[in-house]
Amino acid sequence: MEPQHHHHDGGATAGTCVNCGGPTSFPTPPPDPNPNYIPIRAPAVNLPPTNNREVILRTPVPQSQQLLLLTPPYNFQTPVKKIHKQNDVDQFQSSPTCQNFLGFIVSLSESIRSKKLSDSCHVSPSVSSIVEILQTLSGFVDEIPLAPQTSRYGNLAYRTWHERMCCEAESFMVRLLTKEIEAAAVELVPYFTDSFGNSSRIDYGTGHETNFAAWLYCLARLGVVKEEDYQALVSRVFVTYLDLMRKLQLTYCLEPAGSHGVWGLDDHHFLPFIFGSSQLIDHKYMKPKSIHNEDILENFANEYLYLSCIVFIKKVKKGVFAEHSPMLDDISGVPNWNKVNSGLLKMYKIEVLQKVPIMQHFLFGSIIQWQ
Image 1 (cartoon, rainbow, N blue to C red):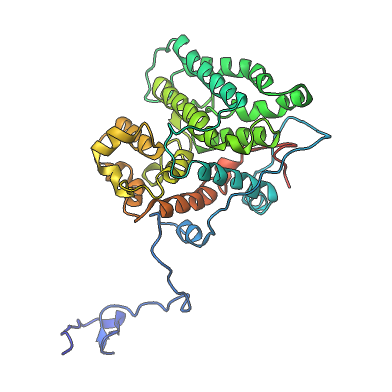
Image 2: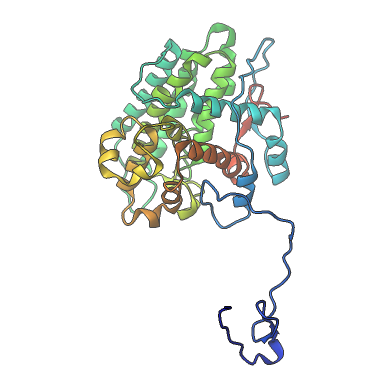
């Protein structure tokens, strides 16, 4: 027996009832603009209500790539900006440069798969030197007193810290480079100095974080760090970098650069969620929904980057987690970490590497080439 339904006198706006064909006060729905569209499975990540959602769903999962080592003769140069409009981003996206850089990010993610941060790994002299450099920068924070502050964001003492970091940057690079490639400092310094935020705006975001990844990529192409260092680049270097950035954010109140508001994954970071989700793949007990378990967060945040990010967010943001971080809350409903990791890699490609406001600051030289 069919359910009963009622029509109202619709006058001039009357349409046709989709159930019985009779007149109705509601206008006839417009024809489907794409009648051949076949919906695919539900997204792994709940994204902002824009066409990016479908773009990300249809994007292939980025794959790791073998790094292309730089070989003599070298032509080191001060890197410059090349991206000014969407066409430039599209050109970059289709280039071997972009594919190799993104493949490097995926390789780092795979190197830490199913591993704790404290797990033993190969730590080369170069990795140790990078960690020491970051620890030195952390020490600068302790030495520079805060300026009087009247606004929510942006303590002016950050500019003093940033200036000191820039002054030391070249000597930091020389520590890492052999005589043969010492001239590469001119190319490495701009990536390094733009990895810790912007001194005039006193802000920090995923573009600066991407510059740090680009600096590591340059070191890898130069052979300063090698593939056997990848796990340590995440569990030793990137962890130290993340600690430094959190210290800078809390001390100097760095404003989020280009924040997506609640629709962003996080105000400042993206990569620790990629690396952290890889760590948790195939974990016996911890699932994506475990981020809501305070005991798990308290006991394991020091071993897993993803959990440490959740703890930090809960520390700096008050209120209901689902309201201030709806995307992370939605991700917690994904069935396994493998899907989370692949979804975040696709999202990084589209939401970071394909966005003009972020990539317009990216630099190109002889190591990361504009093609």
